[in-house]
Image 1 (cartoon, one colour):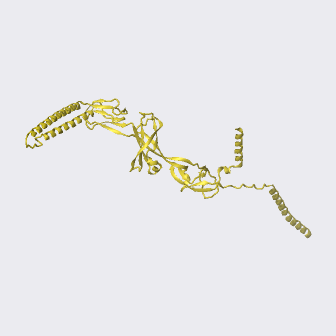
Image 2: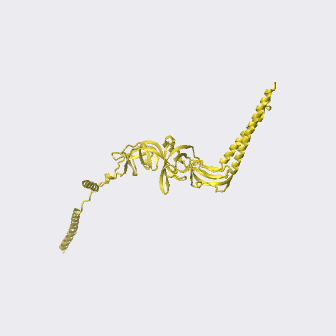
Image 3: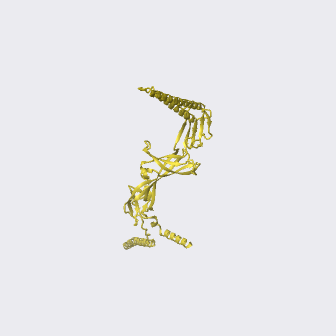
Amino acid sequence: MGLLQQEDVFVATKKQIILPMVVIAVGVAGFIGMSAMKKPPEEKEELDTTPLVSVQAVEINPMSFSVSSYGVVSAKYETELVSQVNGEIVYLSDSFVRGGFVKKGDVLAKIDPSDYEAALIDAKANMASAQATLVQEKAFGKVAEAEWKRIENGVPTELSLRKPQLAQEVAKLKSTEAGLKRANRDLERTVIKAPYDALIEARNLGLGSYVSKGTPLGKVLSTDEAEVRLPIADKDLQFLERKGKDAQVLLTGDFAGKAQQWLGKIVRSEGVIDNRSRMTYLVAQIKDPYGLESNNNELRYGTYVTANIDGSHAGQVARIPRHLVINNQVATLDDDNKLRYKDITIVRQIGSEVIVSAGLDVGVNVITSALDYPIEGMQLALPQDKAPKDELDDSQDTQLAMEEKD
């Protein structure tokens, strides 16, 4: 009994040792097998973090400055016609209407001349009487002088020689001459004439109206020349030669629903700065604005126009977007694709662009895209430098195919 028990214990102990070892061996063999079947991890391509930028090649071209402005067209001369005599309107010209065109000297209206014709006759009669009296007085003076010559040791006085009487008659004659001139002038003023070639802006009377001295009759605008007052900022005067004097001006405005252009010339500066706008006003002049003597497009008074005034020559300059300039520097891409800042000289800003006179050469690549953390000398890349090889090959094949087709 004791021997059998010992053998059972030995067998149980042997099983307890071998069985776990077998399980462990099978597990290790399975792990090794599975590890052998697993694919090795793929190698990841190195990520290129070089910032991409867009560039624009600098172009250098000759340029002449110009200055923009605006204004409203007006006549060079405006005249308010006013009656200088009293009377009834007995005639009105058919052209004396609002919008009518008249020539210099054309009769626009007539005031009843009857009273002034009578006054002229009276003035002529007074003058004739004064002339006769003067002749008579001169004769009296000669007689008195002759009589005094026959008197020995006599000393004639001014009065005895009738010199005061003669002077009085001369004065009366001059007075009648003045009266005759006034009568002639008043009679002429009964006829209202156009002072120059004009456009009738207004007529304030009708046939049969009674007018007196100072009564407004109408208003005329000259048509030979038109003017436009153009406000110019003080900082823009530096871009005009001779402060704009005699500069050519291109005016643009609308007429009959279409844009029209007219040529003019700066004729003067008003010479003062406006208190409210702080602008200097230049005056442009346009000949024959209504095209009455030429084939010019009609430029009506009151038209709003924009003006482009020819300025000085800027020389060889570059134009770049204004937002690319920071502290008078611009970011560029050098031949090694590195960031370089260049100092530039700006001569003028026009809209969204600046005019650069120095600091940039032809062909320099100006960076036009934004950089998050720009550092002088940092490495950059262009989009085409990072294009996948397959895309480059496809583009090259396409280009070759197009060349063969051509």
